[in-house]
Structure formats: C-alpha cells, structure tokens
Length: 354
Length: 260
Image 1: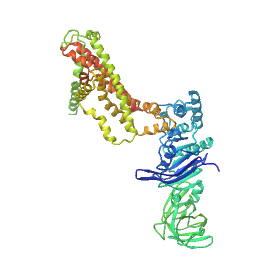
Image 2 (image 1 turned 90 degrees about the vertical axis):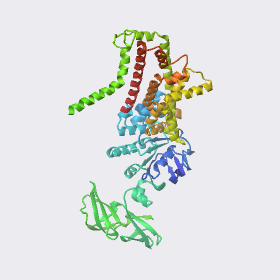
Image 3 (image 1 turned 30 degrees about the horizontal axis):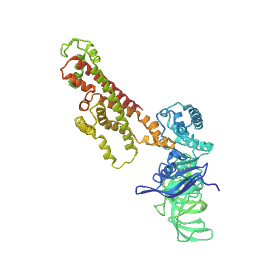
Image 4 (image 1 turned 90 degrees about the horizontal axis):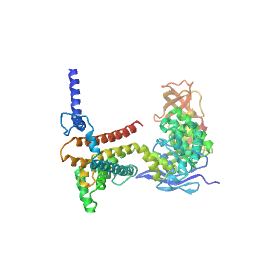
C-alpha cells in the first residue's frame, strides 16, 4: 500500500480558549479531489490553513509526501492556496502574477513567461497575459488565482471557498471547470465549501465537518446515501429525521417505535437502544402510492414549486414536532391543508445511532 | 429674500478666502516691486528682486540645504514610518494600542518643545548644532505623520496578498519589497510629500539646531531682522511656490489612490 499524499494525524487546534479542531485525522490520496464540507465555525477553514502552513496546530502532526510539515512555513511546503478573495497582486500584470512563484524559485524570465502562458491557457485565459487584475471580472480573477497556484506544480492545491464570491450561474460553470482542470493536471485538490451541491458535484472524497470534528467522510454517493451521523444526514442534502427506540429485533429486521408509529427497518439492532431514522426527501411518498413502511398521517403545511419538482413540508398528525420534507414530481397535486398518508420503502430508511 | 441669502453667502465665502489668501497675494505681488520698499503703490512688475535672491550665495546655499534636509529627512521618516506601520498592522504586539499612541504622540507636542528637547539631548551627546541635527529633528516630527498616513491605508485585504506571496515561496524581505511597498506606494508617496512640505518651511527646530549652515526659513528670518524689502518677498514667494508643488504632489498621490 502506498503512503497517502497528505496524512493529518490527530490534529487539535485552539484559538485562545476556543477549541476549533478536536482530534482530527485525515488522509488525502494523490490525484484526488477532496472537499471539506461544513457550516461556518466547523473548523474546515482552520484545517485548510493548517495544511497550507498559515496556522501551526496546537497538537498533532501533518505529513505531506511522508515528510513532517507541521511547522514548515507556507513558502517551503509543497502546497499552494487559492484564497477566497483571490489575493492577486494588484500592481502586477496577470502574467506577472502567474509567474511570481517561478520568479521566487529563480526561474529566468523567458521560461517564466512561457510557463505562465501555458498555465493561463490551461484555465482558458491565454489572452489576459498583459492585463491588470482590476481589468478582469470576478470569474477571470478566480482563474488567474488558480493558474498562479498551479504553475509551480504543488503536491496539493488548497482552495478556500473558491466559488463563494461568484454568482450562482458562474459558480456552477466554474465548478465544472475546476473538476476538468483537476482531472487534466492530476494534482490533489483540497477544497473548502459550505455548499453541499458543490461538494457532491466535485468531490472524489467528501469530508463532512461539524464543531471541530469529522462527522463523516467517503465518496459523496456513499455519504449521501448512507450518512454516518445525523448531522451529515441533514447537512449533506435534507432529511426527515424520526427519533425512536428499538423495541423488537429479529434476524434481519428490527422494529423501531417512533412518534409516527412503529417502523420496520433492516438489520438487527440492540433492543432498547435509541436510534434516529433518516429519510431523503425524494424517498418519501405522500398519499396514493403506499411504500412498504407506513409513517402515519400528515397535514401538508407548504408546497413550493421548484421547477423540476415540488418541495413539500408536512406536519405529522401524530406528533406536531415531526416535520416531513418531501420532494414530489412537479405534476403532484397536493395542496397546503391536505391530510395525506406518508410512507416510504423500508430499504430507503437510513438508521443512525442516536 | 433668497437672493439676499445668496449674495450674503457669496460675500461670506469671499471674505473667508480673502482672509486666508490676501497675505500671500500681497507677498507675491510686492516681490515683483520695481522699487526698494514693499509698500504701495505697486511699481512693478519687475524680476530684479528674484535676481537679487538668486545671486545671494547665502540664500541659494540655504535653499540647497533646505532641499537636502527636506528630502533626506522625509525619506528617512517615511521609511521608518512604513516599517512601524507594517509592524503594527501585521503582528500582534503586547500593548499595541499604547505603543501606537506613543508613536503618534509627537504630532501633538509643539515643535518648540521637541526642538528644545533635542537641543539638550544633542548637547549632552556631543552632537554639534548642524544640518544633521536639524534633519534628525525633522524625522522626529514627520515620522508620526508618515506612520499615521501609511497605517491608515494598511487594510486587511492586503494581508491575504502578502500571504499569497509567502505561499508562492517569497522570503519576508521580498514580500515587503515586491508586494507591500508597491501596493502601499500611494500612501508612501503621500507621506513623503507631506513630510517634505513640513520640513521645507519648518523654522523653530532648524533655528534651534543649526548654526553656520542653515536652512532657508532660518536664513529668511536673518534677512528679516534687517527690515522688510522686496527681496524677502521674493524669497518668500519662492518658498511658497515650492510648498504648492509639494502639496499638489501630495494631493495627486492621495487622489490616485482613491480612484483605484
């Protein structure tokens, strides 16, 4: 087995009294696209700063290519960062910006210009070489920042909410381009975001963070379909959560008593343990077609038309604190005020230890 | 009624500007006097007093001295001011607020006090009265000014720019020289030109700290002791012209900064 490109071992960090990272360990494979996903204050940006060398962790070690880089300054570690505000040098041309890293390495002017042009072509900005940063749009500056960071061929490229400052349309477009560029250069990317759609679209490896800890990590498909914790079930996409208690267990199935009634789930669970059942919005069925697991009756409180689907909120008749979130086809005829039967397929219920 | 208010407010504005500028206008006007006394009636225009100034070795050498002291002391003040502003803006220092207050404190102390303090200090340290001593005095009064101007322009958005440079492999001195100084150039030039202006027509400190070689304001004062004549007007007008050039340069650099 090859050593991971980046190995973060038991890293903790405190800002004064505030613990922002609590015993975080993470491995990053060569050529992978890793997304650190979490709400603000989850520690994801601090983790990125530790990777980039801007912050030295209070405890733990960071190995890059097998070398202990924990206290190595940013200038001397094989990482480069694309900053959220791009941090382009305003007094230099785009070419000067992109060539800066090579200039620091003592590369001669001609080679520098050639490589900078190459990097700019890679991000689709070959014609901007002689422009100044203030003549470019937000999306173009973003690309320059990317080219500037890539041209010195780092082992790991760090991106701090790189799409945060762009409007939605541009964000989705840059998202596709980021992925394509990453595939082309083969550099490992570590990308921080709070946008779960961005995470699902880009990641090979998705790391869900909350309150200084890693809640869940893995391929985004797995994290979405089988979230490890209640937090990742609600942060990585929406879920309806039913809290319950295991009251009966057989060979292959268990019965969980929930506010919406008893629900049969897959797997033998210890009787008496508290669990949470998570159901994705697209798996909930309202009214007509009944699934294999009944979840009682609910009163529809809100229907939001979203174009390709309808997002429906419904409150359980059995327990008013239980809210169902469902995604129905655009052709669904439910109206606010309707009382409907709620169900889903047993296979689609995600059981989370509570 | 509205008409009256208009007229009155125009008159008021005129009076205010007159109050400020009439002395200067009179000074410049009578520097062009053809006869020997700078009093009405105006007999010029004539450039004979300007010729007299420029052929007076004491005045011209004082002028050169003034320019030397102003440029060298301003360059020193702006360099030190920039470095301290950078230090305060980028590093967490114990008692940072207090230290920042202390560095700008000389702005509020009168030049007379600073001059006397330096006089006593230099006496004790064995540094004779000289242009160097006056230059040091000018650094003392202009450093806080340069610090305040540059510090106020050091925003947080530049922190990431400096970080990016470090991240791309720049050692600290290259970050300063290739990134921070060019990015801060407008504030640095503004500080430099304003220091030049203040040093150029500073009298008290120069008077206290120089002896044989002296600066232009001190030389003018010597000239005035023998009474008013159009020659003093001419040299005063020259001083004023240089000040205007410096102030315009200062305004231009600040203005350019605001546009970007």
